[in-house]
Length: 191
Image (tube, rainbow, N blue to C red; front, top):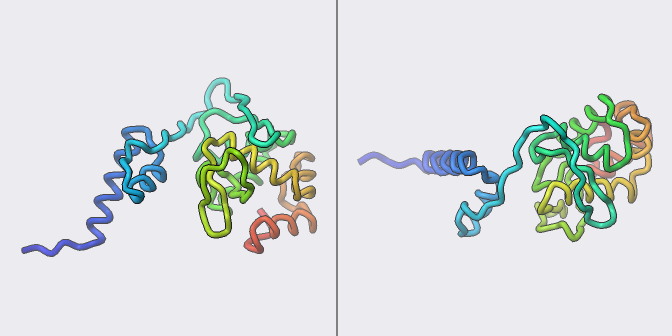
């Protein structure tokens, strides 16, 4: 009788959930979370479409006083998230700003449950905590954008000034470097 390898089972289950999520339009992470919690993957949240064609700006309600401008089709779309953060922050959408925010998202392993820059700010849009550091999960990308911008406005004046100048965060000097280090818990000081 043939031996069944545990990794083969994991690969088959993972591939099945991946396929199911794609066909049903469900969030992959939400489907896995539901399975691990003993719930049906059919109850997973819908995935955000990744498309920014046509009229891309759509205002949504804020969470704690910040009214985000959400670019349609976000979720896993780093460029759309960057544009939304910039618009909500009142910063110009320049190539330097967008590139800085895209790189920042990649450093953060971004898009953890609608939280592009992995803020720990708990708001009324929070639906859970992602890790032991306290990175929040938000029910919508609008809630996550608003929380990230609120965090920036509440303690990162150098980053805010650099983005509002349109020059991006590269070469932002000592204050920007210190604030990126603060944000990352010492993990990085440049983007």
